[in-house]
Length: 213
Ligand code: SF4
Ligand code: SF4
Image (cartoon, rainbow, N blue to C red; front, side):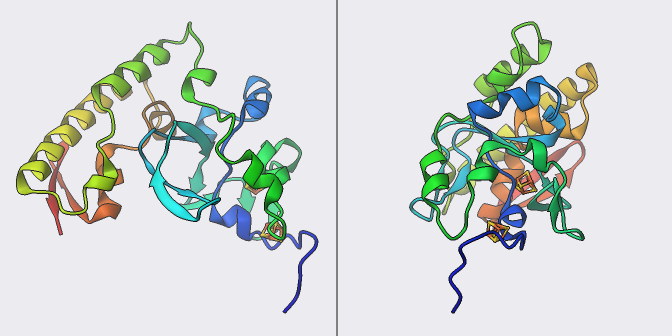
């Protein structure tokens, strides 16, 4: 067994997922090295991995992270062929702190000083009002409590999902949002968060039908 003491640039950490952003990373957005299209919003209550305890729990606060690529969480800035970070000189704080052979530094950063959408979307931006309204209208259900939902609960969730979809369609049309912008401003659609919990989602017109496995 080898005992790694330096980075071999194997890329495993970048392939496991992009980093969460900290307040120290805000200058990257301000100077344009990172755009909202590069980011994904993880809303309060989404189920996330807590490395300190190696558990999956609801996020205690909202945070932003570098989005994934090709349907995976692999960081969008990781070039698999060259095994290099395409934004190395402008990589977020926690990338520099990540040493897989010694997790002390990254665990100290984990969950602290995290950036939210309101740190990025300024007061004069019309999307600020939109994202606040969306958050009030469509708070996430308690995802941990959905392991055995009743039929009534599934129906209610289906209604919430469809109202949220309609709300998104309206905002996308009104503000000409790309998919990446939509996922930044509103997070992932609620139905997308239900699918990994055993819900079966089927398209139905402009909405969805939901059932539990
Ligand atoms: S920190 Fe570790 S996992 Fe990440 S690229 Fe370096 S050797 Fe690989
Ligand atoms: S920004 Fe660069 S170093 Fe950080 S996870 Fe992405 S590819 Fe890896």
